[in-house]
Length: 350
Image 1 (cartoon, one colour):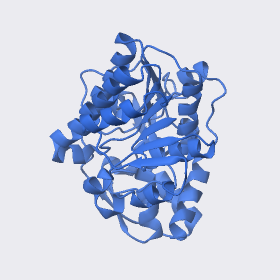
Image 2: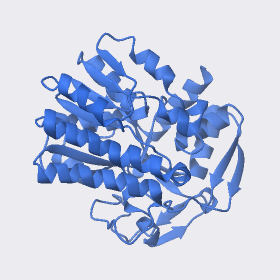
Image 3: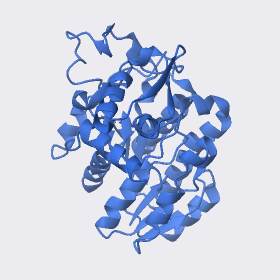
Image 4: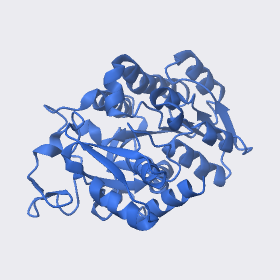
């Protein structure tokens, strides 16, 4: 049995569908708090309905901040739960500044509730946490970055140029955004429960996670919301950096395969891995716009704002080498163009 928090979100629902497809029983925890964060456009209720069609799926409309209810579920299924995949979160930089207590309570306190339930009721289970590259704050902005016509780029002689940024980058003395701080707090808790209590825990520090099932909104879900905006002829606002900020994009299916690889051969002691699309799946916003326009035959309606998001990266490409070394059978299977084609077709079919 697999327990998934944030079970109707992009990564959570992909995880549920993966294990349901293998005829594993799945417990899903999700109260569609995303609709509170981002309004109706961000709601995942449609995915909840889809998941509930499976006899292998059981849904709990529950907030992870509710420690009592979380403990009840873990206690009831303690002998069956083999893995916990924790994807529930408040995921937006800017929204966190709007309600700092809500952001921290969901991201940090909610994670603590789950870890303590793990320790008390099923300490032999594997705990997978969806962290973020925002734990590094704006540290990447101090790399030797140069401006090109359509993107920011790292100088070619830098050690991060080909492979990307690895886990050795410092987390300190940098601006994270309040969201980055709450996720870093969660990340450290996951590590500490693994180290201190010798549990099988892992933090995957994701780059830009994407896919056609993403309920993208203005404040979260870059490629999804950009695709929606272009296909449905809505104005799209770019937050600073001239639209040249670079992200590496990884499809939700490739993320779930990484989770499954770890679950099949877990390590104790609080593992940490950067996980992203790498250079081959990287693009700036301007480059992404160009690709979507060419693939869809629609033209974008853009406005570039001068102010960037506080703590936002100018350039991020993930080095997956550490995870590939530990799990050599895993690899990225879905290229960026295919991800975009799927998102465009998904929007056109609505």
